Length: 283
Image (cartoon, rainbow, N blue to C red; front, side, top):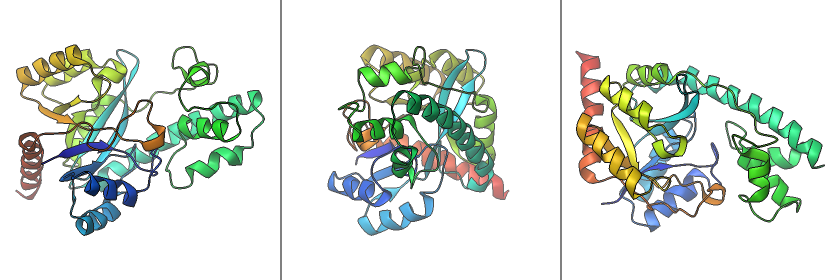
C-alpha cells in the first residue's frame, strides 16, 4: 500500500488538474491520496467522485498558510479529514487574499523590468484560487526571458531574502490556525519543517500538545534532518507522514506522485484520530 498525503493541483500552484493527478496516482498504484492545495478545499467533492471512479482512496486535505510570530517565519500546516470543513472557509479566504495582494505587488515589480502583459500571467491562474510566483515565472518562460522556472532569474526576483520583486506579508498566527483545524475536527500536521526551518517551533508545539503530527518524508529534508524530526516524533508520539509535494511543472526539484509516502500504520493513526474527533462531536 502506497499513501501519498501531499500533492497539489491547478486549484493552487500545481500544473495538473484534479483528474490528471488522480489518474497518475492510479497509474503509479497509489492506494491513498491526499490533494492538499494551498488554502482551498475546492478539491473535496470532485476528488471524492474521481477517486472512487479510479479506485484511489481520497483523504481530504488542505495545506494552510500560517506565521510563526516569535521567529518571524512562514509555516505550513496540513489539515487532514476535517469533518467540519466549513469552519476553515474564512481562514482560507483570508490567506488567499493575503497571497493575492502580495502577488499583485510582485507582478507590478516584474512587469516594470520585463514588458510582458499581465494577461500572460493570469491565463495560468484561471483554475487557481490565488496567484503564485510560479505563474509569473511561467509567463517569463513563455516570453523567452528565461528557459527554466527555477534558476538565476528566479533567485534574482523571488529569493525571500534578496529577491528584487519578492513580497511577503504575515499569514494568520500558527497557534490560531492549529486551533481552528481542531475546531473543524481535522488532524493538524506540520508540513516540511526543513523548508522553513520550523524545527524549534515544532518542538514547542509538540511539547504543548498542540500539533498532531509532522511530515518527515519530504524532499527538503536530508537524512540528518529526518533523524532529528523522528526523534521529536518519538518523544511526543506524533503521527509521521510523508508525501511527494507534487506540483508537476512547478516543482523546484524533480518529484513525482508517490516519490515519498506515509505508512499504512501512520495513515491508520490519522483515520483513528479523525474518527475520535467526530465521535467527540456527537457526544
